[in-house]
Length: 125
Length: 154
Image 1: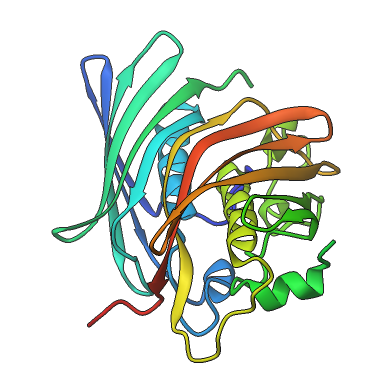
Image 2: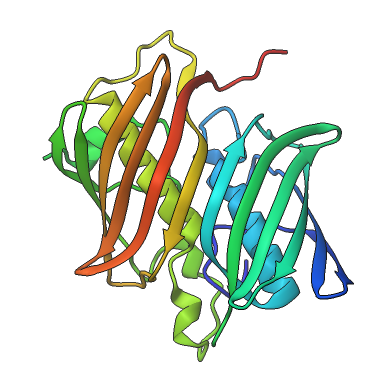
């Protein structure tokens, strides 16, 4: 459970490093086929939905910089992530006037499963 | 008008990740309008503590994209239920320029307007927008889906 609206906890380990004004993030999640969302996606065959890769990035940026997703400039899903897989999302966030430009790559070991470019804004909460 | 019991026949997703309630309009091969009601009983709101600021209730953008994607899938399927021995399903494989300019909160009804731009072989390209009442809250230039086996080749 998260204390903000989210379909699931999409990050179980997060490493954030500052490089000058930029941030280097490594977010990890192990896919649990027994998690309610995964039971519905799909019955009998758990596949970590593409949208949850975006959720993983959003939760990592929320924790690292209290930032919120504004635009997904591009996202490509190249290979499925299945029950028991440990997905590692590596991202670089560069400071902009509005917030952050983020470039990320999700992988299972050596296999790239997704690529994403997105912009984030500071939360005004 | 396609009601929820028919949506369930057409899409493979199930609770809590089946995110289209009803199809309002369908022009085969061209466009679709769907709705998904957001309520305080969504699982995503279960862990929010009392007294949390209003923005904590912003409906997750990931689920908004999924709901739009399922609407695009319904447009592409055009009322054709999946074939029994077909092990492929429509997979969301990419998007370009998906912008969020607003949020939905409990009580809002998401309305997705999706247009099919082109279909090349087994890959479809859709474009569209999402409204919450009269507020435009998201636009997407291109959303791409394709037919793929659910189980990857060993």
